[in-house]
Length: 411
Image (cartoon, rainbow, N blue to C red; front, side, top):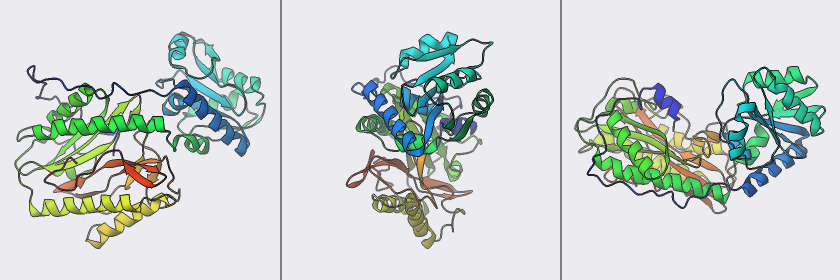
């Protein structure tokens, strides 16, 4: 459901753990040895699709800053700072990169498309370089699209350096490409999901009375790394904390009969998993079973409803109606489901498009989304089950197998 930033902000991952890997415990074997990163040819295909979309929409170029979209189109994995690193993809011609002079060797290491890298020194303006690239590619006026997460200073710098351009949103271009996953992307996401499930199978049987949230998270994170993936996030919520989707800062340890809600994700070559499991330490109560079973039924209903051509908002509406018929809600009220049913996923944990009220984008082959209904009872407990699906020509297919019983909560 969530991002690592959200978990860190809630103080759930930074706890000092008391559980360490035993020296006598055999290491888990990596499951990522056969994972294949995205090729230069596929990066080039992505750029060409973006160029076709720009031409159809009368846009001269697309500006990307460091982040997931830069990696998606160019292969460059970079971070954001006050020093601009960006890509300019023209509607026609080769893309170009702008980066600080001292970063050029590092940028070229991962650049998969093109070789035009233009550098600026600390006393110079990167925005002048961006304007120069546009001019060199024949984009002397008209519309320049900006990827939606590009920061204001980059947009404003371009406006000042080249006021002749009309700045428009690059969202339709970026998501027109990124929303539909290729077989290579799906394969990486499958590996990430397989690793997260294996880490759950390793971790959940080890949870016992007295463990803290940090202890459980530490076991899961260590398992994920040993299995060959990066840890994207690892959250464990115990008892009342599970009633709040992103947890609480209150220290919690496991007691007999507590619900434990885990939400964990891995990444393989940047492609992510996001899986939630909820279980009870010892014997569940009748109320815990009833709520868990209703969440399970909602997840199954969402999967059945998610067919090609169906507006994504309909899936949220359908599950929310089921829960309201059982006395939860209404709408986003608690006890009930206070968050959207699911989100897109790929190179980022949260991408377009979402299972959320009012969303009209129809489901289509290649889309990947989380299916994560939850029911939360403030002051008591919460239940969330989350598995990610992808759309095929025949309909939805899961990356991971959802559990069907609280007695076998992993799946």
